[in-house]
Image (cartoon, rainbow over all chains, first blue to last red; front, top):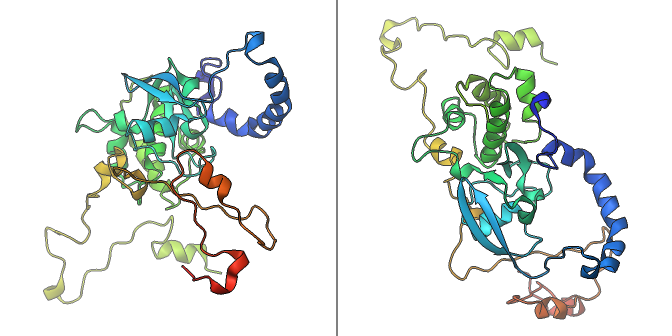
Length: 206
Length: 112
């Protein structure tokens, strides 16, 4: 991924940062929990849940009003409550990349992102990528180069590829490998995916 | 171990694709134009899969559909002496909690 184009701070956790910090975060969470409980709502901390709360998401340019428990992930919110089953839940722990969506221009693992975290942010998933029956150039390239077999990882690979190409419209093979290294394909279509992403021309900068 | 050069010569991984030699008997020569062999075949399920419209079993939602969860022992090496389902059955929204055999009555159990 073209790190030089990244804008730190726009979204707190990228997929790469998530993987780097996952172990640290869980340790910190465990240590900090008693303190949060002790403070409670009385200390001015905004506490939501555990019941359902209204969540307003902006998905593929359309507003989506949902009632969700705060623990619901972005992936489950869209799959279970909005019938947008394009992105798949495979590992559910931020390692396989099948759930990859684009939030404010950055590829994120939607299985490891809470829906309430991304309120007010621009969310894009595979269900909204094609324009009617016209495929996005990346989707077309995956078809043309036969870069899929079972297709379960494909939505995540395509979203990660789109995020990469919008930052870096002409990536080198090494940049493509780095940009897509958060995704896994069990069918082993990696060479064709590399070929497909290399062949894409004319993706506008995001 | 296979010789990498030999693999490449056979058009193996990474090697150049070798066109098949023309048959000796012209009766069996390749038709022109080729209609099946050597032609590019479009993937029929490609557009469905790249748009996320393809429905996998995991994506199917039916009216009144229930969700199941298998609970296994959290211990890598242990003897299951008893299973208490009452807490699971009391949980909100739970329709049924079942086990395939009761460890206390192992002899009378049927295997599912």
